[in-house]
Image 1: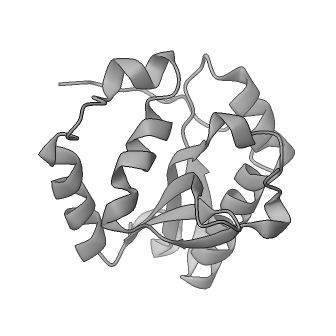
Image 2: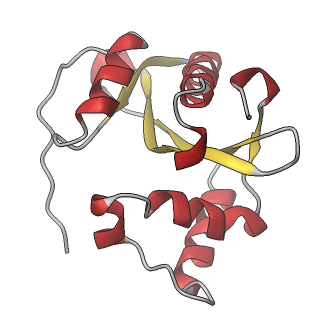
Length: 156
């Protein structure tokens, strides 16, 4: 059984993309957004390459002791004028494989991202979670995040 103590966090690799997309699609919201096909649509790999080239984006994975990807997240460092010109970290696409949830892996990923954002000079870390994901909201609150904004979206 994979525990958080046996997890390594590393930058995602191209060969991880299909596993990441599979985790992103592992609920009703994700299934409506993602396309799980074989082969995976090329757009996912093109997006991965853009993320890889951008020094302000980090896509990382949690890997168990056997080398299996069991979680992921993306950290974006956003420059801005607000907060006295301080940068902010934005967490996105935080996921843990269904069979590994409840073992502290998500907590390790988020703690890694918060520490990385602090090291990169961010003044805060923010994230959005869908209003229907009440378990995720409780998880983030347990890690010290507070409800502070109302998120709004336009999809194209």
